[in-house]
Image (cartoon, rainbow, N blue to C red; front, side):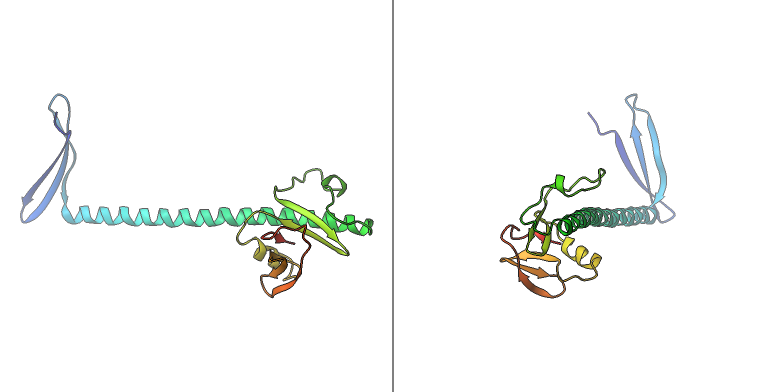
Length: 180
């Protein structure tokens, strides 16, 4: 059994020319390309390499865009949830602890992102996200006009992206949670 492709190199007037032939089962040879110079082949490889590099860069861009979209979606969900929690707290000043979603009066179209929770302690209403999402704390910080009430719970305290350690947080909020 022979390989169906055959590369031929010949020299005409000092120029190396390449041709690629496909051998059919009837032993007929069909030229796929003929008379291509080595310089043309190198140019083709350079263009293909550049195109491949651009495709990889675009892939990284789309992956970044996807992550940014997920951060914005979770952040938006937390903001809606926080608005409902604060409204509930103002109507129920004696409220304490976690409040059931059904009591918050959330819009009918709202679907809470898994991992979002709440707790009311004293006069503070906290919304938190328990899953790891790099960039979410910074996003919420910027969206809240650099509020010192936004950050990540670490070692029992709130660490703000712009100000560092702010204050202790309730034990009901798990360490590592993003707090809004």
